[in-house]
Length: 430
Image (tube, rainbow, N blue to C red; front, top):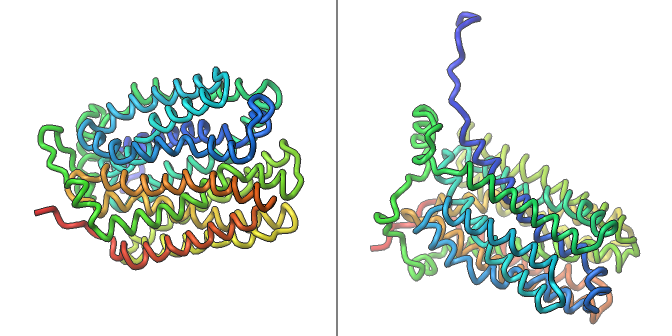
């Protein structure tokens, strides 16, 4: 090749979409983690107990869980673009409503609205990435979006904690409302499906299609598999059980980690917020490195894609059992070590789990399959903060809460191994 001969590279517009969606996850999780640093402030304002804080922490997940299957159906019917715009606008309003709340009831209603608004985020991302990416790039693309949740928590807790300490908890919710509104404007302007994007070249579109990217269908042509059919499929149930186990530990730590460090290890609020970022940074790194780059690299080198994905799903979830080590940690360093192993392993498995709906779903049913899995996950997201609140109140420590998470993770591993099985397309309904 002559030195001045141009290199024929495929344009990378699809990665622009991946980073847009990851920004949406980052912003959405700022709204979620805002509450985890506000326990003392809300106690001072509204007089809430640990149990009440547990209920407030899970309130978001009540409506989020209820909306998962409807959101999946709406995504399959109306598309990512329309549903994503409506959702991001609603969750912006929810943050402003929380900032303006006058008591526990109005704050609770704001969290309900946040759950409704954010319910399409992950099923929508699974559907969008299925459209935009060939199979051999989908794990990395998913890891970029999924790791944003961990990175958001790593930077969000100290960032929002400083705002809370300097200006008060209402300002921390107001700031997330402004950031969310900015994302709505960006998503409104940028996101298109491949078939609607005028700047997508024929070369890149061919790369996506030949790499088994999901084909787009018009709403009037949709004949997606019914929910009743999908709910009878062992693969769907195995994915749902595994995701529920992941989410239990994830939301336990997302909600209670600063309080655990404060109450059990006697670390002040500012330092507990800073220490909390350590395991979430580890999770961000392993999410991208193992769940994203390594999975795609092994598949491109010719390794069996099913074995690679199953190994990371089961192995990563097994690393999550490291939370048991934190049950009797005697220092902050020891606790953060075990929690980092747990969150790091779960983070590595997460992007693989999010690629599964686009790999197993029948024709144009990705939104529904992702919605089913995430609905089960949100049952755990509801349970973990509340159960942990009761355990901490009764036992005055968190060891029993971490042991409970360990048992649930073992059930999730069994779901991946025996129900999900081989990651391949489910047969179309007759």
